[in-house]
Image (cartoon, rainbow, N blue to C red; front, side, top):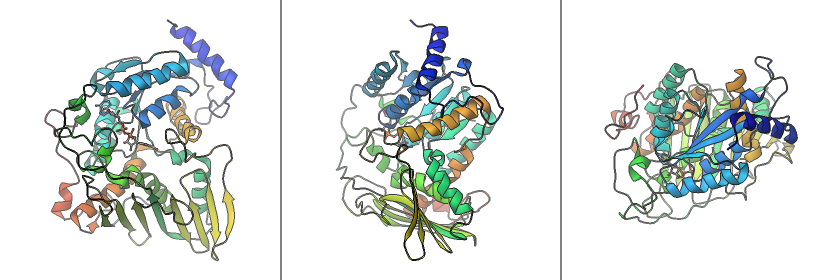
Length: 446
Ligand SMILES: NC(=O)c1ccc[n+]([C@@H]2O[C@H](COP(=O)([O-])OP(=O)(O)OC[C@H]3O[C@@H](n4cnc5c(N)ncnc54)[C@H](O)[C@@H]3O)[C@@H](O)[C@H]2O)c1
């Protein structure tokens, strides 16, 4: 077996050979310190079926980073991910089925969480309490009350926690937001965001035996227990209220986060939503067609449109954000690019990169090189104390905006929000959805 010393030597050599200067600055901002082999970051990835598999593979390619452990309650997913890392690095990460056991393991510094949404806040808080830094996939949580717990836990821990809002680190998205903020299109008071795709029906599931390779108790974790149905795992849990958060948080979170960043706003004052599960009659509970609106006092307004079953693009982009200014519009698609459009509708600038691109045909890991810029920002925050591009407070506020949209949708009411706290004013029915019930023994504890 390779000793730690050997590993560090090899990692340092690999870094030199790859000459990826963009990832290892000789002298970095923050504390002006040279990064050396002792800055190795050991990563543990939790939830490794789809996004977690891509994250494990991408983190394993980062210089001075080793994926030392993996966790999944699905033995098949775990095995596949371990094989992937062995193929890439020649070393087998240690495997765990139970997150609680993995968090007792000492040989890792960073927990990367890509579990289903009902697990996000609970797992992140458990990892922080175990002394780990955390890379938490969006959305930050299942419900607004969990955002409050997460922000508190993060500040108590003294650890670095970032969210998987990776576009916050993509160079041309940053350039677009700078252009929005520096007055290129004059004052901006309205922005819209959208996501469109063609998703098939998930059918009607029925209770079936839990597959042998899956621990259904661990999968459910903090959520109250339910019988296993054939159309929950993997992925389709996204469309069920009990575990998921719908398209609005599955994909809307990314774009509402950019919208809020560009407008320079935090919590809204009013949130509404219209829509429904219109395309198919099946078990899918969230809307497949949804329009959420946000009022930010008298400062600005914004919206998110989601079409899960009609992928017709808006303004040339299937997904995106548009900032409307006094003198023009800035349009961002889902990739690392933006367009500046004048008041006649003419594109006067199209900023894109031919190297750092989003690959729409790549269903597994469409933006690996771009995402690694986000990982580097996270690693710099751990090693050098530099500023995070997606800090947990901002990530929680963006998540909460969309969660409030879903609460407005489910209750059929307009929500009045206290902009200082993000809490719902009045409306007891909506207040009930601000938090959730937990499976006894799995409550989140600070
Ligand atoms: N940032 C992005 O661009 C991006 C892209 C895709 C997905 N995501 C996010 O990543 C998360 C995962 O999405 P997915 O599509 O991979 O879902 P998925 O259902 O395919 O995978 C989730 C995995 O978590 C595992 N899991 C569940 N409970 C667990 C437990 N107690 N311990 C360990 N593992 C457990 C499941 O068995 C499964 O392997 C979602 O929250 C999603 O929003 C983010």
